Length: 105
Image (cartoon, helix red, strand yellow):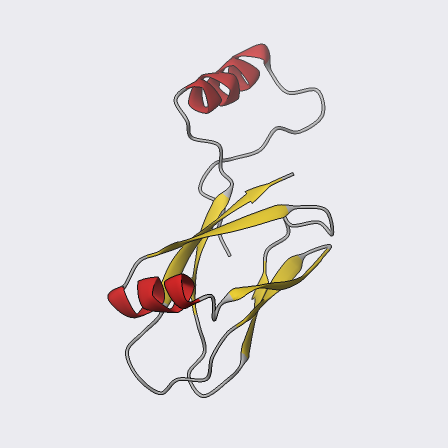
């Protein structure tokens, strides 16, 4: 999993800090990822080091099949833990069900 933006090390240069803050002000918060639900499975585990047990994980569908699954209530965040989360969903061999997820907290 890649996060897209560099983080800050302890004792970072003020210019590096300013660059991170400026990206945040532009809405580039480095808190998103993508997941495709596994076919013929009823859960998908997503490994992401930014997730904690108290994180909010939101989903946005990227495909029509994902939108239908979300609208039906058949996909939801079943568990959160340090380093990842689990999505519960219907088993389907059909079209790809891909989502963007956002992590807050």
